[in-house]
Amino acid sequence: EPDQDGVRRPPLLGDFKWQEDLDANGELYAEKFDAAAKFAAIKGWVFATITEAAISKTRLKNIKKLHMPVHTEGSARHQELAKHLFAKLAKMDISTPAKLIKSLRKADREEGLFVIWMLIGRHDLECNLDEDLTLYTEIPLAAKYVEQVCCSSMIVPGKGKLRFDGKK
Image (cartoon, rainbow, N blue to C red):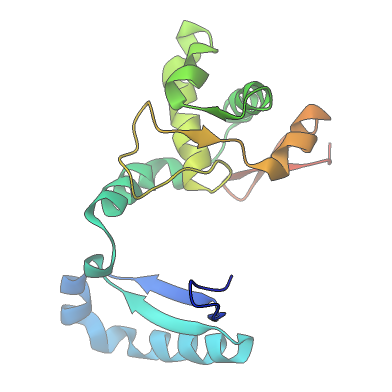
């Protein structure tokens, strides 16, 4: 998308490294970074190494909070809960994790919250990660899923990620 001046910037291929790690192991990463830069150039992208200094403290805190849910393999139970949560969201414009987990049975609420974090971390649900991620964070339904959920698509696992498609 164009920026505020109407300039269209190329996509960024970024590799996050802690500054301490980059200082200590920069030479070990040099070949990887060179290959990434060449790949990005071929695609018309820009490659950059990003450190914690370039990310807001709140966003970094949220990234850390979402790390485990993002890297957890989606189970059949997670799929069931995600389907229920998307069905609830399809009836609302905006919700919060608190409202969504109240729609679950008490026994499912803790795992349901984990699924919400999983969906946010995997970009299946949208929210502002520059604000503290709490039970009261506003979550608008990602419009790309409304029709699929309403048409009772199946949620299927894909390499550790929950995704929607029409496959059975």
